[in-house]
Amino acid sequence: MSLTDTLLERGEIGGRTVRITEAGAVECHEYPLAPLADGQVRVRSVVTAVSPGTELTYIGRAATNPYLHKRWDPERRVFVPGAPTQDYPIVFGYRAAGTVVESRAPSVALGMRVFGKWRHTEYSVLAASDVAQQLLPDELTFDDGVDLAQMLPICVNAVSFADDAQRGAPVVVFGCGPIGLIVAQVARATGAAAVYAIDRIRARLDIAAGLGLQTRDASAADVALDLKRELGSEAVPVAFECSGNTRALHEAIRVVRRRGTVVAVGFYQGEAAGLSLGDEFHHNGVEIRSGQIGNLHPRWDIGALRSFGVELARSKRITLGGLPRLRVPVRDAADAFKALADREQLQVALDY
Image (cartoon, rainbow, N blue to C red):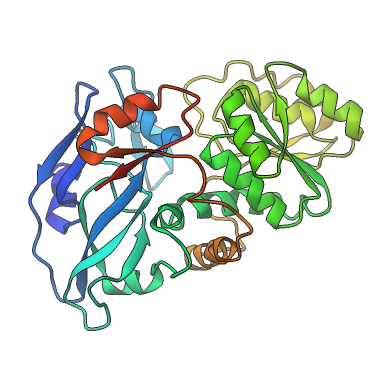
């Protein structure tokens, strides 16, 4: 049984659903709905948002995601040769919000607003216990909700790997995509004295500036050298690399102080072009930490991580749904993914 068949049987997808075909194309396909069991509810998506850093690695004949080319051995936690872990069609997504439209749980009423990490699908079945932990607060919008279950926890977890080195100090964030902009805000909300947001795309730097971040154009200057001249060579204890570009990872290494920390948040594809480990990494004793959500920082479990993120959003210390999004009907999902090829387009959301 394919993964998609399994998802269908469990009710995790249903109705209009975005899928990626073996030819690399994106399409909207209609799937039947699975019956509900006792203790389950059906949620109808209002909006789901595309995560370009991960989802685009599955698109096209030259897709780079390692799950398409290697087999992940979960016991030994290593990729090995063999049949790829991921098969087609691929149904992906983890940024979603919607309303309860059917319930077989007395504690869950119709119309309840829910956030979650279900796929780009019109209907998804959730356990009532999950719904209880993922109710969307009244003061937050559905656009806020799409980032509460996974995207915001990704960013809070990443900042946690600074181990509080950001408090009272300037930090640098490379990449002003959705992840970078939220990481920058979380770093500020948890005590950073100043946050410098780095990118090459003017439109994204303008968004960062609108959030009150200090910006630098990486295409116009040697950012690491300029910041060390301006702030001092020992000023920056931690930098966050959020673009998934290994050349940017090298620049993050250059900007931190001696024995500083670089938190690698991006999803790096292929071999590491532009990463010169014999340079500042070697001479300054820089530590690189993977800040991926699949490996939670020891201070968190997923429930506490989400709760902390929700409070950040409710207190207005960070902006989520207010970040620019192109809105596209789910039936035009192929156009939505094509729009992400325009690097000035920050993110795309699908309406149902």
